[in-house]
Image 1 (cartoon, rainbow, N blue to C red):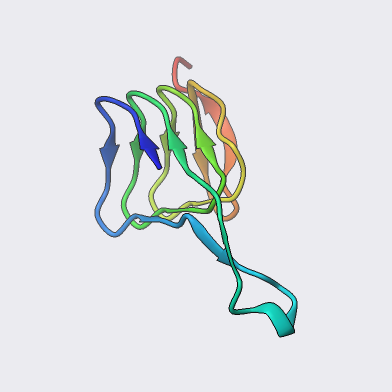
Image 2: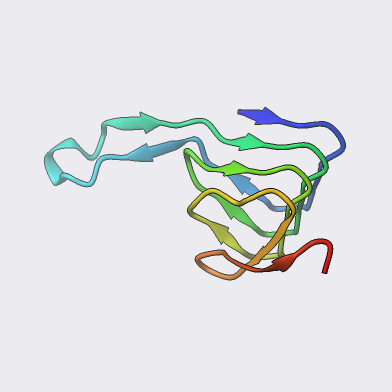
Length: 90
């Protein structure tokens, strides 16, 4: 996991870097994937970031969002799954 400079990460945020196999006979198998959080990112309380996700510089993740895919730099994402709703400069 990489966390850039000057990030704000809210309480109860979950950053998961491991996932299990879906095949019932292999559910004990673990699949690691790193999370990369850019500089100046703000992640609200109770958010979850799933394995393999990259969050771009200056992005904002709203509270209680579930981030399943990469977040572009300079955007605001909300929801479950998280989706882009605006630019941070709007």
